[in-house]
Length: 152
Image (cartoon, rainbow, N blue to C red; front, side, top):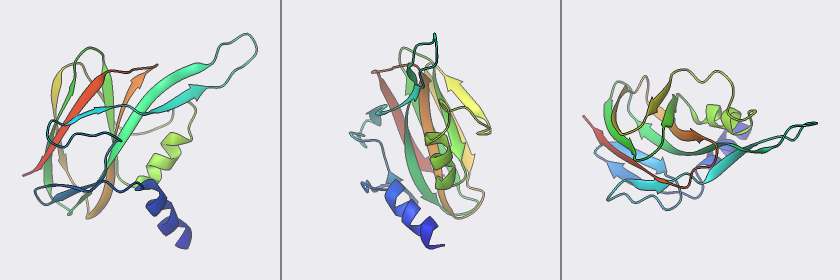
């Protein structure tokens, strides 16, 4: 139990607390603009070099850690202006650790949704606590994504 507590503190650092109604964003990407929702993907997963293969960035990603009450309905708008982006909703920050330490983001993450323009994300928090929304693209991406959230 102590290990899990230490792990959660490490994931939420640096602490970026924003309120969206009764939902709290405990961690947002570095440089997240809470007024416009703009952010850039700041983390890369790289492909390991193998014989006769080239490595490099296979996934760019960043994430939000949210705190919500069980049964609470959340609605978010996400936008990618010039490239297909994806999002994954994880039921706990522990899944984030597995994602970050996976082989280029491969693994079973549940439903992975793609979007190329504005999309609406509807979510009912299954239980009270923290969950994670990961945004990602294939390969290197230096463009801007947008994410705004409100509790219903």
